[in-house]
Length: 111
Image 1 (cartoon, rainbow, N blue to C red):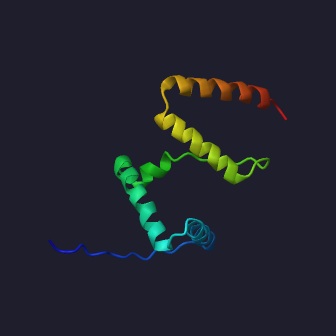
Image 2 (cartoon, rainbow, N blue to C red):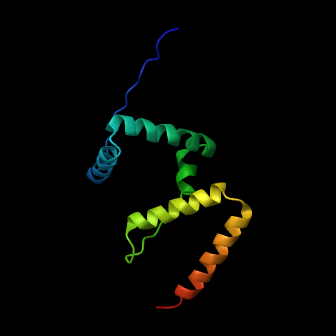
Image 3 (cartoon, helix red, strand yellow):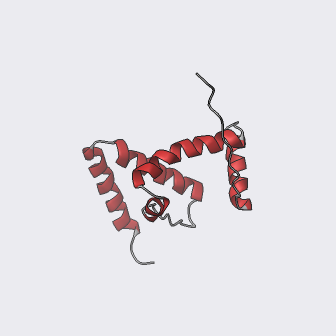
């Protein structure tokens, strides 16, 4: 059985994205190549399910950010909700929905 050939691709990133990617790799004690491989391995099944990048990005949630809370905290909240919606039983989802709807009513009034 022969060894698999490893292929390499060149990707150009904006300075901001490169900096974020480099910071994430450093924080996780990984090389940028290893992190890129992991991201692509996670991404490819999603891409296959959607059929194309156009379909995938058209359905990607657009997250607006509040200035009152850090983007990082808001991203954590979105990630937690995504996980609940993906894995939790329907009764948990219903309770979370009720709770968030109550809070939206309380805090969602006109400014």
